[in-house]
Image 1 (cartoon, rainbow, N blue to C red):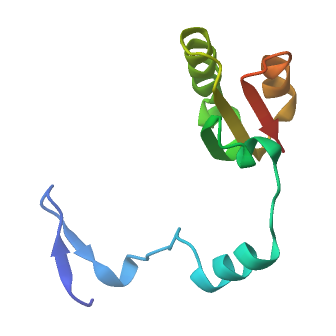
Image 2 (tube, rainbow, N blue to C red):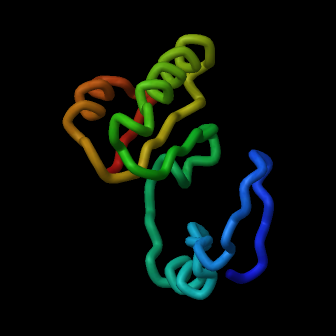
Amino acid sequence: MSEVGIKKSGGPVDLDKVHHINNGVDLEVFDNNRKHCLFEDDDLANEDIFKVIYTGSIRKANNLELIINAAKYVNEKSNGNIKFIIFGDGVREKIGKQMQNRKYLQCDF
């Protein structure tokens, strides 16, 4: 057993059994993609619109209904210059139905 840490609960932790899985970004890949994989979008380019952007998985666990409800609320209270934009992949059918005919929401899969 290598170094032994002590958990707050009081038990020993064998650091040979602890693994770190990085959930970060490879900066070389990021820089390459930034140069070569450009994504053009009229709403993103429009400087007159404030954007709230979600990027990630589109599935029940991510609770995108919260974002949709927030977008509806903000749209009712604002002058229409705020747009919620959702980019991701996942369960498209449900979120697509919720977003139909809502100009303050945009979803790109």
